[in-house]
Length: 540
Image (cartoon, rainbow, N blue to C red; front, top):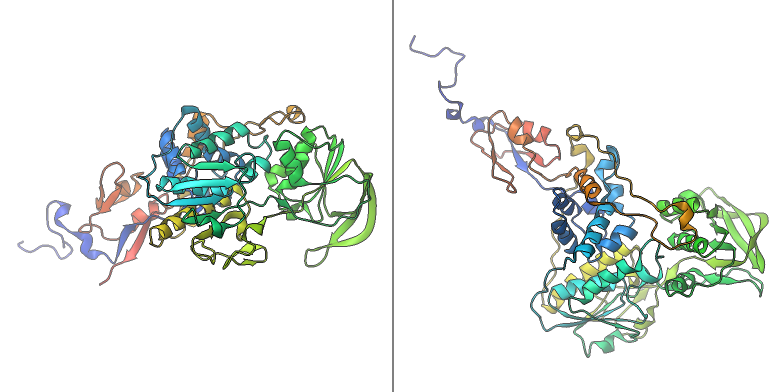
Protein backbone atom coordinates (compact mmCIF):
# COMPACT_ATOMS: atom_id res chain seq x y z
CA UNK A 1 0.00 0.00 0.00
CA UNK A 2 1.59 3.25 -1.13
CA UNK A 3 -0.33 5.64 1.10
CA UNK A 4 0.08 5.96 4.90
CA UNK A 5 -2.74 4.76 7.09
CA UNK A 6 -5.10 7.62 7.95
CA UNK A 7 -4.06 7.60 11.64
CA UNK A 8 -0.33 8.02 10.90
CA UNK A 9 0.50 11.71 10.55
CA UNK A 10 4.22 11.78 11.44
CA UNK A 11 7.06 10.70 9.30
CA UNK A 12 9.07 7.62 10.02
CA UNK A 13 12.44 8.20 11.70
CA UNK A 14 13.86 10.30 14.54
CA UNK A 15 11.38 12.32 16.57
CA UNK A 16 13.68 15.28 16.06
CA UNK A 17 12.40 15.45 12.54
CA UNK A 18 9.02 16.47 13.90
CA UNK A 19 9.20 20.01 15.25
CA UNK A 20 6.35 19.82 17.73
CA UNK A 21 6.81 23.45 18.73
CA UNK A 22 4.25 24.32 16.08
CA UNK A 23 1.54 22.86 18.35
CA UNK A 24 2.26 25.32 21.16
CA UNK A 25 -0.19 27.95 22.46
CA UNK A 26 1.91 28.80 25.56
CA UNK A 27 5.63 28.87 26.13
CA UNK A 28 7.63 28.43 29.37
CA UNK A 29 9.70 31.42 30.50
CA UNK A 30 12.24 31.35 33.33
CA UNK A 31 11.49 34.20 35.75
CA UNK A 32 13.38 35.45 38.79
CA UNK A 33 11.02 36.40 41.60
CA UNK A 34 11.48 38.32 44.83
CA UNK A 35 12.09 35.97 47.78
CA UNK A 36 9.99 36.93 50.82
CA UNK A 37 13.13 37.15 52.98
CA UNK A 38 14.72 39.74 50.66
CA UNK A 39 11.45 41.62 50.44
CA UNK A 40 11.14 41.88 54.22
CA UNK A 41 14.74 42.94 54.99
CA UNK A 42 14.84 46.63 56.00
CA UNK A 43 18.54 46.76 55.12
CA UNK A 44 17.79 45.52 51.61
CA UNK A 45 20.07 42.48 51.85
CA UNK A 46 20.02 39.87 49.10
CA UNK A 47 19.38 37.20 51.72
CA UNK A 48 18.68 34.33 49.35
CA UNK A 49 21.85 35.04 47.37
CA UNK A 50 24.20 34.91 50.36
CA UNK A 51 22.47 31.84 51.76
CA UNK A 52 23.04 30.16 48.39
CA UNK A 53 26.70 31.20 48.45
CA UNK A 54 27.03 29.67 51.89
CA UNK A 55 25.37 26.36 51.00
CA UNK A 56 28.59 24.86 49.65
CA UNK A 57 30.81 26.30 52.37
CA UNK A 58 31.63 29.47 50.42
CA UNK A 59 31.49 31.51 53.60
CA UNK A 60 33.74 34.35 52.46
CA UNK A 61 31.72 34.86 49.28
CA UNK A 62 28.51 34.82 51.34
CA UNK A 63 29.96 37.43 53.71
CA UNK A 64 31.02 39.61 50.80
CA UNK A 65 27.48 39.45 49.43
CA UNK A 66 26.14 40.71 52.77
CA UNK A 67 28.75 43.48 52.82
CA UNK A 68 27.35 44.88 49.58
CA UNK A 69 24.39 46.05 51.64
CA UNK A 70 25.30 45.91 55.31
CA UNK A 71 28.66 46.61 57.00
CA UNK A 72 27.53 45.07 60.31
CA UNK A 73 26.78 41.34 59.78
CA UNK A 74 28.19 40.28 63.17
CA UNK A 75 26.19 43.02 64.91
CA UNK A 76 23.02 42.44 62.93
CA UNK A 77 23.27 38.70 63.49
CA UNK A 78 22.81 39.50 67.17
CA UNK A 79 20.41 42.43 67.43
CA UNK A 80 18.21 42.29 64.32
CA UNK A 81 14.65 41.11 65.01
CA UNK A 82 14.83 39.21 61.73
CA UNK A 83 11.61 40.13 59.85
CA UNK A 84 13.13 38.01 57.06
CA UNK A 85 12.43 34.92 59.15
CA UNK A 86 8.87 36.01 59.85
CA UNK A 87 8.35 36.21 56.06
CA UNK A 88 10.27 33.00 55.26
CA UNK A 89 8.16 30.53 53.26
CA UNK A 90 9.81 27.62 55.02
CA UNK A 91 7.98 28.72 58.18
CA UNK A 92 4.77 27.48 56.55
CA UNK A 93 6.39 24.11 55.86
CA UNK A 94 8.10 23.43 59.22
CA UNK A 95 10.26 26.20 60.71
CA UNK A 96 11.74 29.32 59.16
CA UNK A 97 15.37 29.24 58.06
CA UNK A 98 17.64 30.60 60.81
CA UNK A 99 18.80 33.47 58.60
CA UNK A 100 19.85 35.63 61.54
CA UNK A 101 21.98 32.83 63.00
CA UNK A 102 23.78 32.22 59.69
CA UNK A 103 24.43 35.95 59.28
CA UNK A 104 25.98 36.08 62.72
CA UNK A 105 28.18 33.08 61.93
CA UNK A 106 29.40 34.75 58.73
CA UNK A 107 30.06 38.02 60.57
CA UNK A 108 32.00 36.28 63.32
CA UNK A 109 33.93 34.18 60.81
CA UNK A 110 34.96 37.35 58.97
CA UNK A 111 36.34 38.84 62.18
CA UNK A 112 38.13 35.58 63.01
CA UNK A 113 39.65 35.21 59.53
CA UNK A 114 40.41 38.91 59.05
CA UNK A 115 38.44 39.26 55.83
CA UNK A 116 38.54 42.80 54.49
CA UNK A 117 35.86 44.72 52.60
CA UNK A 118 36.48 45.62 48.95
CA UNK A 119 38.93 48.36 48.03
CA UNK A 120 37.17 51.73 47.65
CA UNK A 121 36.75 53.24 44.21
CA UNK A 122 39.32 55.84 43.15
CA UNK A 123 38.91 59.17 45.03
CA UNK A 124 36.23 61.40 43.56
CA UNK A 125 37.39 64.55 45.32
CA UNK A 126 33.96 65.02 46.93
CA UNK A 127 33.76 65.56 50.70
CA UNK A 128 30.76 64.48 52.79
CA UNK A 129 29.99 65.12 56.46
CA UNK A 130 27.94 62.55 58.36
CA UNK A 131 26.45 63.75 61.64
CA UNK A 132 25.97 60.82 64.01
CA UNK A 133 28.12 57.71 64.51
CA UNK A 134 25.24 55.31 65.04
CA UNK A 135 24.16 52.50 62.68
CA UNK A 136 22.61 54.86 60.13
CA UNK A 137 25.51 57.30 59.97
CA UNK A 138 28.20 54.62 59.94
CA UNK A 139 26.38 52.64 57.24
CA UNK A 140 26.16 55.76 55.09
CA UNK A 141 29.85 56.50 55.68
CA UNK A 142 30.79 52.94 54.68
CA UNK A 143 28.92 53.05 51.37
CA UNK A 144 30.09 56.57 50.55
CA UNK A 145 33.70 55.57 51.23
CA UNK A 146 33.39 52.54 48.92
CA UNK A 147 32.13 54.91 46.22
CA UNK A 148 35.35 56.93 46.54
CA UNK A 149 34.14 59.93 48.53
CA UNK A 150 36.06 61.45 51.45
CA UNK A 151 33.84 60.98 54.51
CA UNK A 152 34.03 62.57 57.95
CA UNK A 153 31.74 61.34 60.73
CA UNK A 154 31.18 63.61 63.72
CA UNK A 155 29.48 62.54 66.91
CA UNK A 156 29.01 64.24 70.27
CA UNK A 157 29.62 60.99 72.15
CA UNK A 158 32.86 59.62 73.55
CA UNK A 159 32.69 56.41 71.49
CA UNK A 160 31.18 55.50 68.15
CA UNK A 161 28.19 53.21 67.80
CA UNK A 162 25.26 55.33 68.92
CA UNK A 163 22.40 53.27 70.28
CA UNK A 164 24.23 50.06 69.35
CA UNK A 165 26.64 50.95 72.16
CA UNK A 166 24.51 53.02 74.53
CA UNK A 167 21.11 51.39 74.07
CA UNK A 168 21.81 47.66 73.62
CA UNK A 169 23.30 45.83 76.63
CA UNK A 170 26.50 43.82 76.28
CA UNK A 171 24.72 40.53 76.96
CA UNK A 172 23.06 41.02 73.56
CA UNK A 173 25.93 42.76 71.76
CA UNK A 174 29.50 42.23 73.04
CA UNK A 175 31.51 45.42 72.70
CA UNK A 176 34.52 43.74 71.07
CA UNK A 177 32.28 42.68 68.17
CA UNK A 178 30.87 46.20 67.77
CA UNK A 179 34.33 47.78 68.00
CA UNK A 180 35.75 45.43 65.36
CA UNK A 181 33.06 46.19 62.79
CA UNK A 182 33.35 49.94 63.40
CA UNK A 183 37.14 49.71 63.03
CA UNK A 184 36.65 48.04 59.66
CA UNK A 185 34.69 51.09 58.47
CA UNK A 186 37.38 53.45 59.75
CA UNK A 187 39.92 51.29 57.90
CA UNK A 188 38.35 52.37 54.60
CA UNK A 189 39.62 55.88 55.27
CA UNK A 190 36.53 57.21 57.05
CA UNK A 191 37.47 59.87 59.61
CA UNK A 192 35.49 59.49 62.84
CA UNK A 193 35.65 62.57 65.09
CA UNK A 194 34.20 61.97 68.56
CA UNK A 195 33.18 64.64 71.04
CA UNK A 196 32.40 66.90 68.06
CA UNK A 197 28.88 68.31 68.17
CA UNK A 198 27.52 69.82 64.97
CA UNK A 199 25.11 72.70 65.56
CA UNK A 200 24.52 74.02 62.04
CA UNK A 201 24.41 71.65 59.04
CA UNK A 202 23.99 74.51 56.58
CA UNK A 203 27.13 76.22 57.85
CA UNK A 204 28.99 72.90 57.52
CA UNK A 205 28.45 73.06 53.77
CA UNK A 206 31.24 75.63 53.70
CA UNK A 207 33.68 72.73 54.19
CA UNK A 208 31.70 69.83 52.74
CA UNK A 209 29.67 69.33 49.58
CA UNK A 210 26.96 67.31 51.31
CA UNK A 211 25.82 66.73 54.89
CA UNK A 212 23.90 63.68 56.08
CA UNK A 213 22.01 64.01 59.38
CA UNK A 214 21.81 60.64 61.16
CA UNK A 215 21.29 61.51 64.81
CA UNK A 216 19.70 58.68 66.77
CA UNK A 217 16.85 58.78 69.27
CA UNK A 218 18.94 59.22 72.42
CA UNK A 219 16.66 61.48 74.44
CA UNK A 220 14.12 59.94 76.79
CA UNK A 221 10.55 61.05 76.25
CA UNK A 222 9.32 63.19 79.09
CA UNK A 223 6.37 61.82 80.94
CA UNK A 224 4.70 62.95 84.13
CA UNK A 225 4.46 60.37 86.88
CA UNK A 226 3.13 61.65 90.22
CA UNK A 227 5.96 61.18 92.72
CA UNK A 228 7.01 62.27 96.16
CA UNK A 229 10.20 64.25 96.72
CA UNK A 230 12.10 61.24 98.02
CA UNK A 231 11.10 58.90 95.20
CA UNK A 232 13.99 57.65 93.08
CA UNK A 233 12.86 58.00 89.46
CA UNK A 234 15.28 57.56 86.54
CA UNK A 235 14.96 57.36 82.76
CA UNK A 236 15.84 54.17 80.92
CA UNK A 237 18.35 55.68 78.48
CA UNK A 238 20.39 57.21 81.30
CA UNK A 239 20.47 53.82 83.02
CA UNK A 240 21.63 51.99 79.88
CA UNK A 241 24.13 54.74 79.06
CA UNK A 242 25.63 54.53 82.53
CA UNK A 243 25.94 50.76 82.28
CA UNK A 244 27.63 51.05 78.87
CA UNK A 245 30.19 53.50 80.27
CA UNK A 246 30.95 51.33 83.27
CA UNK A 247 29.14 53.60 85.71
CA UNK A 248 25.84 51.81 86.42
CA UNK A 249 23.40 53.62 88.72
CA UNK A 250 22.42 52.15 92.06
CA UNK A 251 18.96 50.74 91.42
CA UNK A 252 18.43 48.67 94.56
CA UNK A 253 16.96 45.20 94.92
CA UNK A 254 13.39 46.08 93.96
CA UNK A 255 13.22 47.87 90.62
CA UNK A 256 10.07 48.85 88.74
CA UNK A 257 10.37 49.57 85.02
CA UNK A 258 7.47 51.48 83.49
CA UNK A 259 6.96 50.74 79.77
CA UNK A 260 6.47 47.91 77.31
CA UNK A 261 9.11 48.29 74.62
CA UNK A 262 12.49 46.70 74.03
CA UNK A 263 14.20 49.36 76.11
CA UNK A 264 12.05 48.47 79.12
CA UNK A 265 12.99 44.81 78.74
CA UNK A 266 16.68 45.67 78.35
CA UNK A 267 16.62 47.71 81.56
CA UNK A 268 14.81 44.97 83.48
CA UNK A 269 17.28 42.30 82.39
CA UNK A 270 20.20 44.64 83.12
CA UNK A 271 18.82 45.41 86.58
CA UNK A 272 18.74 41.70 87.28
CA UNK A 273 22.43 41.50 86.41
CA UNK A 274 23.20 44.49 88.65
CA UNK A 275 21.79 42.68 91.66
CA UNK A 276 18.07 43.40 91.61
CA UNK A 277 16.21 40.48 93.10
CA UNK A 278 12.77 41.64 92.03
CA UNK A 279 12.69 43.58 88.74
CA UNK A 280 9.10 44.25 87.63
CA UNK A 281 7.88 45.64 84.30
CA UNK A 282 4.63 47.58 84.62
CA UNK A 283 2.77 48.01 81.33
CA UNK A 284 -0.64 49.55 80.63
CA UNK A 285 -1.72 47.04 78.00
CA UNK A 286 -1.63 43.26 77.48
CA UNK A 287 1.24 40.95 76.52
CA UNK A 288 -0.18 40.69 73.01
CA UNK A 289 -0.01 44.49 72.64
CA UNK A 290 3.49 44.78 74.05
CA UNK A 291 5.80 46.26 71.37
CA UNK A 292 8.88 44.51 72.80
CA UNK A 293 10.27 41.59 70.85
CA UNK A 294 8.65 38.36 72.01
CA UNK A 295 11.95 36.49 72.30
CA UNK A 296 13.38 39.20 74.55
CA UNK A 297 10.28 39.11 76.75
CA UNK A 298 10.54 35.32 77.05
CA UNK A 299 14.19 35.61 78.06
CA UNK A 300 13.33 38.28 80.63
CA UNK A 301 10.69 36.07 82.22
CA UNK A 302 13.11 33.12 82.25
CA UNK A 303 15.67 35.31 84.05
CA UNK A 304 13.25 36.24 86.82
CA UNK A 305 11.71 39.47 85.57
CA UNK A 306 8.05 39.83 86.56
CA UNK A 307 5.55 41.52 84.26
CA UNK A 308 2.38 43.26 85.35
CA UNK A 309 0.15 43.87 82.39
CA UNK A 310 -2.89 46.16 82.37
CA UNK A 311 -1.32 48.30 85.08
CA UNK A 312 -0.13 51.88 85.44
CA UNK A 313 1.86 53.76 88.05
CA UNK A 314 -0.50 56.08 89.89
CA UNK A 315 2.07 57.38 92.39
CA UNK A 316 5.71 56.79 93.28
CA UNK A 317 7.21 57.43 96.69
CA UNK A 318 10.26 56.40 98.67
CA UNK A 319 10.41 52.61 98.78
CA UNK A 320 7.02 51.99 97.20
CA UNK A 321 4.70 52.73 94.28
CA UNK A 322 0.94 52.70 93.88
CA UNK A 323 -0.24 50.70 90.87
CA UNK A 324 -3.71 51.10 89.35
CA UNK A 325 -5.35 48.26 87.48
CA UNK A 326 -6.44 49.01 83.89
CA UNK A 327 -9.01 47.46 81.58
CA UNK A 328 -9.33 47.54 77.80
CA UNK A 329 -12.35 49.31 76.34
CA UNK A 330 -14.17 48.21 73.20
CA UNK A 331 -11.52 49.91 71.04
CA UNK A 332 -8.68 48.14 72.84
CA UNK A 333 -7.47 51.21 74.75
CA UNK A 334 -6.57 50.94 78.44
CA UNK A 335 -8.92 52.66 80.87
CA UNK A 336 -8.51 53.11 84.66
CA UNK A 337 -10.56 50.93 86.99
CA UNK A 338 -9.91 52.65 90.31
CA UNK A 339 -8.46 49.41 91.73
CA UNK A 340 -5.04 50.09 93.29
CA UNK A 341 -2.36 48.25 95.21
CA UNK A 342 1.12 49.02 96.50
CA UNK A 343 4.40 47.49 95.35
CA UNK A 344 7.79 47.76 97.02
CA UNK A 345 10.20 49.73 94.84
CA UNK A 346 13.69 51.05 95.58
CA UNK A 347 13.72 52.81 92.22
CA UNK A 348 11.46 53.46 89.24
CA UNK A 349 12.83 53.54 85.69
CA UNK A 350 10.74 55.22 83.00
CA UNK A 351 11.01 53.54 79.60
CA UNK A 352 8.28 55.36 77.72
CA UNK A 353 10.01 55.99 74.40
CA UNK A 354 12.83 58.00 72.88
CA UNK A 355 13.14 61.20 70.92
CA UNK A 356 15.76 62.75 68.65
CA UNK A 357 17.52 65.98 69.50
CA UNK A 358 16.45 68.02 66.47
CA UNK A 359 17.90 71.28 67.69
CA UNK A 360 20.56 70.87 64.99
CA UNK A 361 18.04 72.01 62.38
CA UNK A 362 16.46 74.81 64.43
CA UNK A 363 16.59 77.91 62.29
CA UNK A 364 18.07 76.12 59.29
CA UNK A 365 16.50 77.66 56.16
CA UNK A 366 14.29 75.29 54.19
CA UNK A 367 14.54 72.39 56.64
CA UNK A 368 11.06 71.58 57.93
CA UNK A 369 10.12 69.54 60.98
CA UNK A 370 6.59 68.13 61.10
CA UNK A 371 5.33 66.08 64.05
CA UNK A 372 8.87 65.84 65.35
CA UNK A 373 10.30 64.42 62.09
CA UNK A 374 12.61 66.13 59.62
CA UNK A 375 10.92 66.24 56.22
CA UNK A 376 12.83 64.81 53.26
CA UNK A 377 11.96 64.18 49.64
CA UNK A 378 12.12 60.91 47.72
CA UNK A 379 15.90 61.32 47.48
CA UNK A 380 16.37 61.73 51.26
CA UNK A 381 17.19 65.42 50.83
CA UNK A 382 15.79 68.09 53.13
CA UNK A 383 14.51 71.40 51.85
CA UNK A 384 18.05 72.77 51.83
CA UNK A 385 20.15 71.55 48.85
CA UNK A 386 22.98 69.29 49.95
CA UNK A 387 21.57 68.49 53.40
CA UNK A 388 20.17 64.97 53.67
CA UNK A 389 18.60 63.14 56.63
CA UNK A 390 17.71 59.59 57.59
CA UNK A 391 17.31 57.07 60.38
CA UNK A 392 15.52 58.20 63.53
CA UNK A 393 15.43 61.80 62.29
CA UNK A 394 12.81 60.97 59.66
CA UNK A 395 9.63 58.90 59.92
CA UNK A 396 10.85 55.29 60.22
CA UNK A 397 10.91 52.14 62.30
CA UNK A 398 13.54 52.58 65.00
CA UNK A 399 15.65 49.46 64.69
CA UNK A 400 19.31 48.93 63.86
CA UNK A 401 18.35 47.16 60.64
CA UNK A 402 16.12 49.99 59.44
CA UNK A 403 18.84 52.48 60.30
CA UNK A 404 21.43 50.57 58.27
CA UNK A 405 19.03 50.44 55.33
CA UNK A 406 18.46 54.20 55.57
CA UNK A 407 22.21 54.80 55.57
CA UNK A 408 22.74 52.68 52.46
CA UNK A 409 19.95 54.34 50.50
CA UNK A 410 21.06 57.82 51.60
CA UNK A 411 24.63 57.10 50.45
CA UNK A 412 23.38 56.17 47.00
CA UNK A 413 21.25 59.31 46.78
CA UNK A 414 24.11 61.52 47.98
CA UNK A 415 26.48 59.91 45.47
CA UNK A 416 24.02 60.50 42.63
CA UNK A 417 23.52 64.13 43.69
CA UNK A 418 27.27 64.76 43.85
CA UNK A 419 27.62 63.35 40.33
CA UNK A 420 24.71 65.40 39.04
CA UNK A 421 22.69 62.29 38.29
CA UNK A 422 19.64 60.56 39.72
CA UNK A 423 19.80 57.33 41.67
CA UNK A 424 17.84 54.65 39.88
CA UNK A 425 15.98 52.04 41.89
CA UNK A 426 16.24 48.49 40.60
CA UNK A 427 12.93 47.07 39.34
CA UNK A 428 11.20 44.85 41.87
CA UNK A 429 10.06 41.49 40.52
CA UNK A 430 6.89 39.80 41.70
CA UNK A 431 6.89 38.12 45.09
CA UNK A 432 7.61 34.39 45.30
CA UNK A 433 4.66 33.23 47.35
CA UNK A 434 4.37 29.91 49.14
CA UNK A 435 1.62 28.84 46.74
CA UNK A 436 4.15 28.69 43.87
CA UNK A 437 6.37 26.13 45.60
CA UNK A 438 6.31 22.35 45.26
CA UNK A 439 7.30 21.63 48.83
CA UNK A 440 7.17 17.85 48.47
CA UNK A 441 10.56 18.05 46.77
CA UNK A 442 12.18 19.20 50.02
CA UNK A 443 13.18 16.84 52.82
CA UNK A 444 12.34 17.47 56.46
CA UNK A 445 15.02 19.56 58.14
CA UNK A 446 14.28 20.95 61.62
CA UNK A 447 15.78 24.33 62.42
CA UNK A 448 19.05 24.51 64.32
CA UNK A 449 18.74 25.75 67.90
CA UNK A 450 21.38 28.23 69.01
CA UNK A 451 23.03 27.55 72.37
CA UNK A 452 22.21 29.82 75.31
CA UNK A 453 24.01 30.79 78.48
CA UNK A 454 22.78 28.92 81.56
CA UNK A 455 20.15 30.82 83.52
CA UNK A 456 22.20 30.53 86.69
CA UNK A 457 25.04 32.49 85.10
CA UNK A 458 22.90 35.24 83.59
CA UNK A 459 21.96 36.80 86.93
CA UNK A 460 25.52 37.87 87.72
CA UNK A 461 27.19 38.57 84.38
CA UNK A 462 26.76 40.60 81.21
CA UNK A 463 28.25 37.73 79.18
CA UNK A 464 26.50 37.10 75.86
CA UNK A 465 23.32 35.06 76.33
CA UNK A 466 22.72 33.68 72.83
CA UNK A 467 25.55 31.70 71.27
CA UNK A 468 26.43 31.25 67.61
CA UNK A 469 26.49 28.39 65.14
CA UNK A 470 29.60 26.50 64.14
CA UNK A 471 30.62 25.74 60.57
CA UNK A 472 28.63 22.52 60.34
CA UNK A 473 25.38 23.88 61.76
CA UNK A 474 25.64 27.09 59.73
CA UNK A 475 26.06 25.00 56.59
CA UNK A 476 23.03 22.88 57.49
CA UNK A 477 20.91 25.95 58.21
CA UNK A 478 21.87 27.65 54.94
CA UNK A 479 20.89 24.50 53.05
CA UNK A 480 17.39 24.66 54.53
CA UNK A 481 16.68 27.61 52.21
CA UNK A 482 14.02 26.75 49.60
CA UNK A 483 15.39 29.20 47.00
CA UNK A 484 11.88 30.61 46.57
CA UNK A 485 11.21 31.99 43.10
CA UNK A 486 14.74 31.58 41.72
CA UNK A 487 16.24 28.70 39.74
CA UNK A 488 19.02 26.78 41.47
CA UNK A 489 19.58 24.33 38.60
CA UNK A 490 17.97 21.27 40.15
CA UNK A 491 17.44 19.75 36.64
CA UNK A 492 13.76 18.99 37.29
CA UNK A 493 12.67 20.81 34.14
CA UNK A 494 15.41 19.09 32.15
CA UNK A 495 14.45 15.64 33.41
CA UNK A 496 10.68 16.08 33.18
CA UNK A 497 10.40 17.53 29.68
CA UNK A 498 8.81 14.89 27.37
CA UNK A 499 10.15 16.66 24.28
CA UNK A 500 13.81 17.07 25.28
CA UNK A 501 13.24 20.78 24.72
CA UNK A 502 15.12 21.98 27.82
CA UNK A 503 18.80 22.67 27.12
CA UNK A 504 21.36 22.84 29.94
CA UNK A 505 23.74 25.76 29.49
CA UNK A 506 26.31 24.67 32.07
CA UNK A 507 26.84 25.36 35.79
CA UNK A 508 25.66 28.82 36.73
CA UNK A 509 24.06 29.51 33.35
CA UNK A 510 20.76 27.70 33.92
CA UNK A 511 18.69 26.56 30.91
CA UNK A 512 17.04 27.66 27.73
CA UNK A 513 14.03 26.29 25.88
CA UNK A 514 14.32 24.91 22.37
CA UNK A 515 11.10 26.36 20.99
CA UNK A 516 11.25 24.20 17.88
CA UNK A 517 10.30 21.21 20.04
CA UNK A 518 8.54 22.67 23.11
CA UNK A 519 4.83 22.13 22.64
CA UNK A 520 3.87 24.13 25.73
CA UNK A 521 2.60 21.27 27.85
CA UNK A 522 3.61 23.11 31.08
CA UNK A 523 5.07 20.09 32.86
CA UNK A 524 8.30 21.99 33.54
CA UNK A 525 6.42 24.85 35.21
CA UNK A 526 4.22 22.48 37.19
CA UNK A 527 7.20 20.51 38.50
CA UNK A 528 9.57 23.41 39.24
CA UNK A 529 10.19 23.22 43.01
CA UNK A 530 10.75 26.97 43.40
CA UNK A 531 8.08 28.37 41.05
CA UNK A 532 10.64 29.96 38.73
CA UNK A 533 8.91 29.12 35.42
CA UNK A 534 5.90 30.98 34.02
CA UNK A 535 3.71 29.80 31.16
CA UNK A 536 3.20 32.77 28.82
CA UNK A 537 0.58 32.78 26.07
CA UNK A 538 1.98 32.84 22.56
CA UNK A 539 1.10 35.81 20.37
CA UNK A 540 -0.53 34.31 17.27
